[in-house]
View 1 (tube, rainbow, N blue to C red):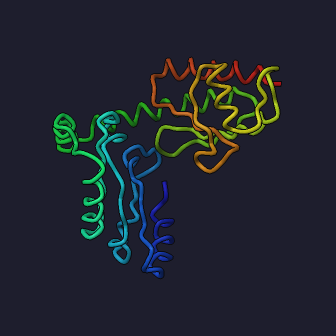
View 2: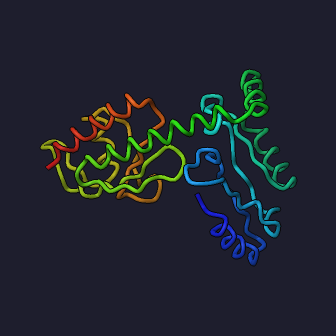
Length: 218
């Protein structure tokens, strides 16, 4: 969710360090709630050193097809091709045909999908506000929230004591039967990651379980 101005500032720094390559993960380029997607590859002075990582999993809802790609200087792309050719097989025929359809069709299905994500995002923010002890910023893209849950550290339900985000995710899994991801996997152990890539009904059911499970921690 970097703005063009932020990327411009980063590009200025990278321009003075010619041995640095920039790997830019742009898999969520279409799931953007606040503006147009901006790529760091747009700046000519560093363009040849940018390696864009992307795929069809998010923007085209083709997660199970497992088809991704890179865009890079030919020398980098050819080196990657040599490596990949030794460790994995080619994309299957069904995936290739589905990808052709996705890439040659218009983006109306994707745009409609993003509208649904926006509705879910707002509902998730409302549900989070109903849970004591949780702080959460409103996400500007993708389909996750990353709430701060450290107020539950040191609490227990009499059987399980919460020391960190991993403890909390396992507690929610075992006691609430809801799967979340530890924030330590993303560099912040005070948080957990919750996806809202599901139906509104399941989202509401999941948050009710989370709320009930957390209420038992004292």
